[in-house]
Amino acid sequence: MATVRLEESMDDLDLLRAEFSEWFGNARTVGVHGQHQTQLQSLGSVLEPACAEIRDQLLARDGDGSVGDAYERCRRADQQINLLRRLWRWYADRFDQRHDDTFGDALRAADEIVWSSWREMFGPAVHPEGLPPAPLAAIAPVDVATASPRTEVPQELRAPRDPLLAKWTAAMPIPTITLPSVVVRRPWWLIVAVHECGHQAHAEALRSGIAMDATGPALADAAAAAGAGIDEQESWSLWAGELAADAWAVTLCGTAPIWSVMELERRSDDRLLESPGRAYPPPLVRWAVANLVAGGLGLGAAADEHRGLADSSPYVGRLLQRAPAVAAALLDTHLGTTTLRQVGAGTPQWQVEALRWRTALPAKAAPFPQTRVESARLCAAGGALVWQESAGRASGDVAAERARLASRLLDVLPNCRPPGRRRAAQATKQVTAATELVLADLRSAGW
Image 1 (spheres, one colour):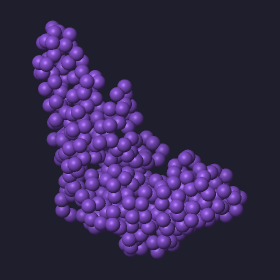
Image 2 (cartoon, rainbow, N blue to C red; image 1 turned 180 degrees about the horizontal axis):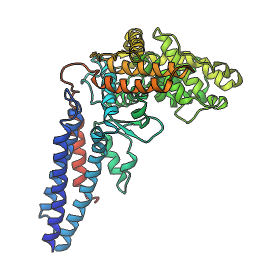
Image 3 (cartoon, rainbow, N blue to C red; image 1 turned 90 degrees about the vertical axis):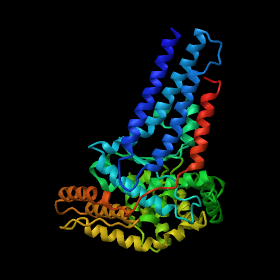
């Protein structure tokens, strides 16, 4: 009886290893120029030794040799196998969307935008260990894009062993971002991937210790210097993550992300003066800070017809008084040995390029893909600007124009990539630490 039970657990383990091996082999062929290889190798480097550890435990003879002891070992192994399967599938389900006829084109476009943004965010002056693994994008039926920091347990993984999965996902060097399913039909919304990369860049900077002047305290100090009281300083600190992601998007793409944020946040006048959540400033304030960041980088501000609303809210009026100091603090906080303002030395030219894409994308002849690092994100920015322009027009066949824009973006964006092999630095220390953590947990007595 014990032998049969042991064979069942061993069969389940062998099945997991076989399924992962087959999946891994297929996944390595997806994309070009070595796309996703670092994430895949990181996942394999953790799962393979974990499976070997479970096998060793199943074959161990360190118990009392009874049937009950064998069943205990098998039950423990079954729990561990299921846990490893859920960890693997959290990443695999997102990766496999690239094979899907519905999501494939949009995700291939998103991958180029993510790489274009990530490569610019983490130059040699920012990350001394080289380019960290880029976020893995996925599409889901959500209203807005989200970043899933590695320290956050994904909802799908919340199970009886939630604390253990929290430790493992926190240790894995594979950040993810989730895009709304609307990007499939309206790919100009892929511009939001740049903002989400900003969130992940902030999380990576904190993890690796290069986040220098922590953004929250920096914004609180800037607001204090501009006359903010304690409560308001705390609010600015809480809003730092969202404002920093906006600042990154403006720096890398020009004014197009501001239009996208304005569209996402647009609501009744009274709600424009209210914070939609603890981590978000009132929309009117958020737009103002983003416009001031653009101005600090030498760009004109995006139009804002709601500015006069601030006169009806003393609270928002006070926040807007601090906004210039906050925008300056965002541009001047250090990231490695550089600042956002220094990265933004290229922003005026990037804005010019985005405007060129705005002209080229709706033209009669389809534009050729460009192959510079910044090309994909600026193509996305140009698409957002075309959409913004068409939304303001009542004449013409807007539906047909948008359909052509969607087709153009999904044709051009996946090919806007630099030549040569693409690879982030292998996060060797993180992978080793994650592997050691998982193995230690598998060997613990708490099962």
